Image (tube, rainbow, N blue to C red; front, side, top):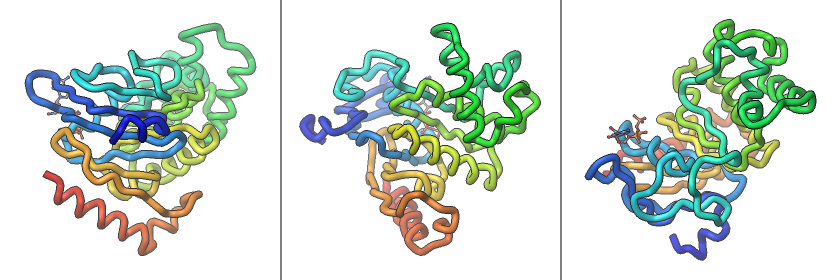
Length: 253
Ligand SMILES: Nc1ncnc2c1ncn2[C@@H]1O[C@H](COP(=O)(O)OP(=O)(O)OP(=O)(O)O)[C@@H](O)[C@H]1O
């Protein structure tokens, strides 16, 4: 994709190459992620999805090429980027409220307005009654909700999620998908979400890209209406999109 086209992108990867050793793990990736849109990245295990996410986060530096965030070359992780990993990685000695506040308290002293924001986020994910508890007293799904709230406390312009709900049961995962869509919609966050689950990708995304062998294939627009509703999962349009993605994954080298 040309640099001119990338001017409209909030995140732009331009001819990005990366390898941990001699082997190319990310191989000449060009990708433009429009501002405020929800992007999913699917692909087989080992195809390079997490590596690409880390490049978009500034946690890894490209061997060749460039990552731009809002037009500027990315030089490392910053406050405008939030993360949610597969494991919630909460601090057990802090309360749920203090875990949500952690990204702020690492930088400055936290005030009552911050605590209000954290309580509002916990409320949005159905955990207002759990603010004083500790992570070990929560279920896995509740811990994942706290991790999402924590990632959004700084109101990041870009949220990166690496299979955040993979360890959860299907019903909890669906609830969390709805919570995430509602929260990201409120803040108009640009989202990049890595998942193995084609149904999850179609439900969440405006666009789904497939990664195979370090390259991007088939960036598919998901033209389902918003807000997404659970009943859509059983409709013909949803199933047709899942089938198209599955076939494209099977056809990818
Ligand atoms: N720190 C590392 N050092 C060396 N090789 C690595 C490292 N991290 C990942 N790799 C290798 O890079 C390749 C891509 O890994 P990556 O984690 O990006 O894939 P993935 O698509 O996210 O896989 P999964 O879906 O299983 O999480 C794999 O072959 C992996 O073994």
